[in-house]
Image 1 (cartoon, helix red, strand yellow):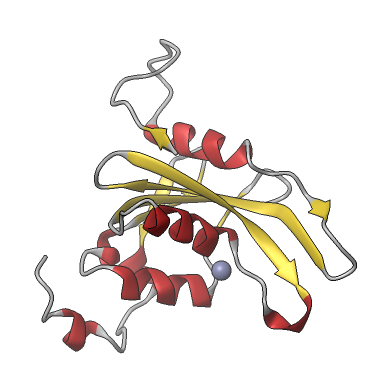
Image 2 (cartoon, rainbow, N blue to C red; image 1 turned 90 degrees about the vertical axis):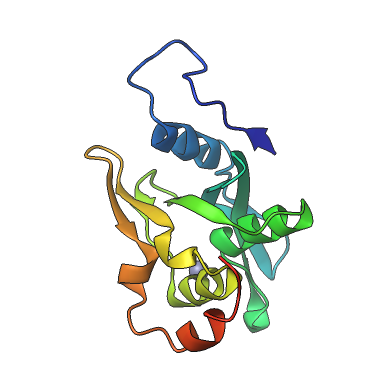
Length: 151
Ligand SMILES: [Zn+2]
């Protein structure tokens, strides 16, 4: 777990929180075969919580559909550490490009917290373009039930 500090760590004023998250995820990229059935580390994700903490995760690809995406692994790491509200998400593919969460991860993110539609997801590291999760998951089935929760 990293603590995001609201000033550049290395004195580079051009380094944004997005670069911090990208670097945190990229450092976890390490494609490797764990067994004849499982490989891991080909995709990595970093999430920033409302408390300013950064959690990371890597994909775990398995036979028999038991695997887990990097985003959901990062979410599990966050929940294990007692948090559940995400404000920013970055996913880094094996080629170093920024990726987008799959449908299963989008769904889990939506179910996680009433503010999840406001999660910002990086779509381009060069332009720092982002998209709101709520725009990726429009007309979400669980909106009415989620309204019962306090914001
Ligand atoms: Zn996914």
